[in-house]
Length: 362
Figure 1 (cartoon, rainbow, N blue to C red):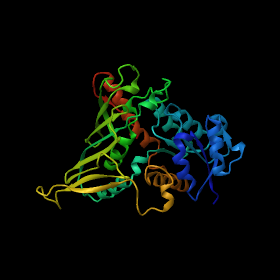
Figure 2: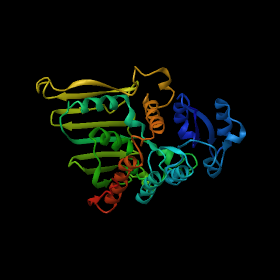
Figure 3: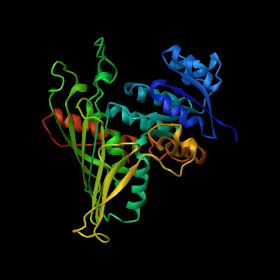
Figure 4: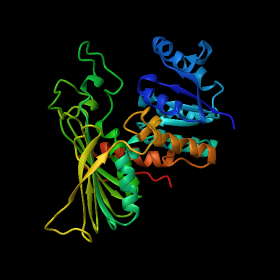
């Protein structure tokens, strides 16, 4: 069996995925695409790529002889580039999120179903080591029946919205905070084996950046969701609030107890808490647990990607889906289920906090 030929577009964001995929024994890095020729020239020697394997135009790149296209461009291009790659016969691994509109979300699903090629959204937070551990714990029934989850991703990136020196707008500037919701919704929906059917939201003002009018500088957005199983999920998102270090937090409640991570990651882990009513007492309370990003038992190459060992295991699942001719764990439908609720929650917030239906694709 020959190696799968993979090409990458968007090398600044995609650097971690290049490293993660390049270590897979089934993969050969065959092409790179970026608007900056200097970036291409810097990276090409690492993979022994000649000039005819380097592209600055996506249309030329997507029609190159490749098996896989990895998309790490600004989110506004994700849908159109994913569809073009699928239609050109490639499998697609695309950075999150799927798209910024519901119509584009539907179009990506249609392209996946129509072409039969593998699409996977690269939601690496689902592959944090502690999330993978929690999945095993929950599948064993240790939390009983889950009924509530909350999560937050508060990460101040004001300098990525507008250049602080020149004032030049950057591509994230028009992005409402809650549009970028897959880091929060993805892991909890995976753990709950559930999907969102209704959404509402609330947006804070622009106290942090009163001079700005765009969506990107909203202080905070909260999403509240009803799931298909009748459960409730709450998420919190900001990209301008001063929280340092940034916060990544998950909490799940079930009929037998709860589990939560810590909000601050230090040295690759946070300190969380876990309680099981069958094995612990109210008096003793929850036990402290480690929530590591890295699987200490993973091979050394698992650290070549980013976000602990998450991208290593994510890539393993993606390549396995190609080899086994199956849908990826976060295929187009699941990717939209992780992404579309944020689009709807923002619209609900703009309408004053009404409840809106979230489109269903299964």
